Picture 1: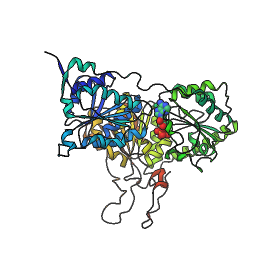
Picture 2: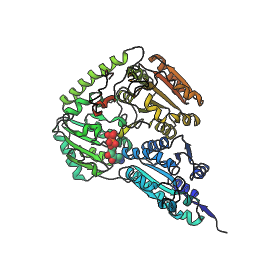
Picture 3: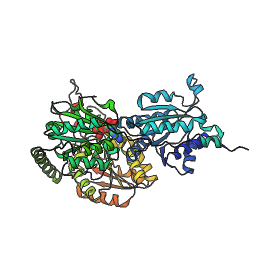
Picture 4: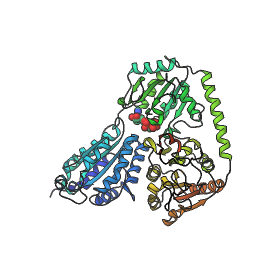
Length: 568
Ligand code: ADP
């Protein structure tokens, strides 16, 4: 009698052949047995409470490991719940694969009303790098290989892999099945830059008076830390990290211009973008934020990124490791001299801003405001530099990004390219699962709500995650007066005791009202290596509407908002 296998086992075999060791998801029809078979074969399955959080965890795993993070969803609504996370992964260039079971195609395509009927493949397409469907059990090997190759090669992104339930349940001859699965060789091959492109770029830098390097999360993702450091230090050019590139070189590095960001941007006359897009996060490279005669040099794996906003005087297509190594090699024939005037100008501004920050952090108002809470967190994290930091919110994001320095690469995960809320718990879970290291999630109280139920997941798996909720009782702030019987649209509950959520599921809860209580609680929580929530009670009047993005917020001419005081 010939041995048989089935689609469930074949998917797992194909994933294992490609070193997948973890899946994030929620079970249900038709993929419950897929999770069981995966777990039984040694793949870790982390079960969530909402598919978006599972998808966000997979995306963060992709960013941290440079291998595709895998999420698993059920058909119809489960698939749809996961899709925004896959779209967000694509926007952030994180390699992620959402594998979803789907309903009977014959019924779905004739719209006959199958269980959870949805044309998932076409629904996914506009939001992802690629969407594929496997329609025969013998195509599972090629489908998985294709999804992996697409997710990680070139510009990484989200891939949707549709597997109808019937395919999962199909039987196949075991020997033929084994032969249909393969391991993808060199999934993200090196891409070397052309020598004349390297010369052109170094020529632009050599002619500049005030050069600047901007490091983006693509540079952090590339895991080319030594090549980046060597070029930055040999060239001696000041650098500015985008938020998720903080720590690629330590924030304490003498060449960091982070504390002189606006001066560096307005004054630089040549800017080398390394894995950073000239999108809204960099003001599209427009003046007056940037000098109108700035020359841009850009390193990116995706050539279509060049000229997306500004003329790129020297495009460098290739992977960051190869390009920066080539740039370092070329320095001997294109020496760069960074003027002492430029470094001095930046150093002066940095010292002035550092002093302002020191004074802000030293204040001790009661009730606490963002800076005082963040000052306490900063102290504890300085003592624990290997902690992974997850950060989302409006003020909680803007201010933590500036206050919390990072010393190690890829240790900060945040709202990213979309400035999205809801990534917090998914990212925190993935950081803990993938690295085994302690994680501190610094959350606005509103932001936490988007994925808050995952605290149960964190407790169930006993993950070393501490969630600090900067609770000012509202979206932006919690003191907007009601105009009728209902709370104002921005108002949540300033007296909410979020720490009880952790206690409900067996974690530890803390409620703190002063910086010293916060320091003590956070040190203890990190040392416990287990799950906890610290509800950090802030002044409901602390915070500014839309954080640092107030300029993007159209104001109603008919009903102007009450003036808000700046906490920044
Ligand atoms: P940030 O938001 O930090 O500015 P972005 O997400 O805008 O960063 O930019 C990341 C860029 O890095 C993307 O354009 C992406 O194509 C690029 N990228 C990702 N991985 C690599 C790599 N290995 N080599 C070169 N470029 C890369």
